[in-house]
Image 1 (tube, rainbow, N blue to C red):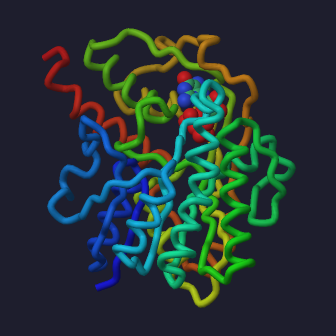
Image 2 (image 1 turned 135 degrees about the vertical axis):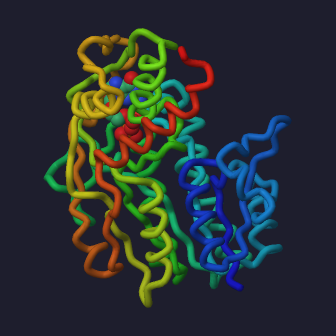
Length: 323
Ligand code: GDP
């Protein structure tokens, strides 16, 4: 039975990846930070099937010990400060987790389990103010937030440990991926949750920032399969993962509100609080290499994804809504 070690297991991607790996017969070990409360909502249904160990991306010793003790075959580094907006108000902490945390994990692997295969969760935010469209593995980076800058560091340190020390280390450049388990601060979930609450009479408006930003939104459940495939190749390499289609925040609103029979224009209010100091206007992937070499392609399309999220939010809020 192969062993996988996952940082960020309590997050959206960690929970889908844990399900995926358990189905494949892996022993799944998750790294969690010590806390007096338990943020295990997303893995509650898996809690008897995964092992959780305490370590912290800010603490080298704890990481090296966990990697040494568990001797994983595969390591997935999904933990990060992952919200772009927060990276402006907490830029140093974002750098500690999202940039230097990658080096600490790579050091742990190099010292304690150098044969383990390492996956780094890189991000389309590295393309930022895009220099070409669509974006592929050869598109230069131009990050536009402390988060994007930290992810560029994480990408290059992964490539450097591969080239310098011969580690099987890969960087998966994933475009935005969403699900009913997405954090409520991200725009897709913010919109689907609001559409459900407005429909049920629990809210009357939705305050958003830039409605013209465009993203390539896919389904997180599809994307964890691509992560795993990247670690099953003969040669470690980096891959872009996305749908190749792009939609505006406005289209997202239109689609989500239409799912509950409403017109978003009656409820969406623009609020300067949600605009960003620097914006990423357009992201759209060229996932041709992942299709060709990994045999990967997305299964869930945009409309289906948004409908899945709206339905889940309707179910969650229904007990509180008007009868
Ligand atoms: P990101 O691509 O990682 O920054 O993912 P987000 O879901 O946080 O944001 C996607 C896009 O939606 C960005 O261009 C935001 O500027 C835009 N956006 C517009 N209004 C909002 C809002 O109220 N919240 C968030 N999170 N994003 C918003």
